[in-house]
Image (tube, one colour):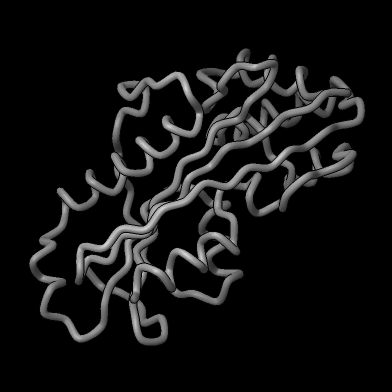
Length: 205
């Protein structure tokens, strides 16, 4: 597996999320991508904080099972594996990725003239030392009325099917209807920059 250099260490992003790839690139890092390919529905916990942490750890463990970790012990440069998970909280209920277009439509209609919160967890694993550092980040967003035709366009385009709660504040169809945010857009998009940078530095120590 070829890795691109990123200063004095290398990064593997353990996610298929286009948003997380974009955010990590925006942070100035080069990285390779691996996916965990786990069945997230097999991990069920009632508290959102516990669920996202368990899923981020399960993703890391699954990727570690695909690579020869021992190969990273003797390398001069450490390699960091970044995994993350996020859920949306709406009406007191946890929302993960929509199961189909009907559920995505229902989710987005619920945000119209409403409010949603996100709970995310980022985990950074140092493959050279075995050190793991993780942390949570939360954000909130409220929306103006989202027209039905906009919701249909979002659902038919399909990208909302691959994100927690079908929530995409950064999407050009959605962003005009964002009324207010508590927290940062990158947190709602699934990879909070400040937290991720802190965890990277902690995992390197």
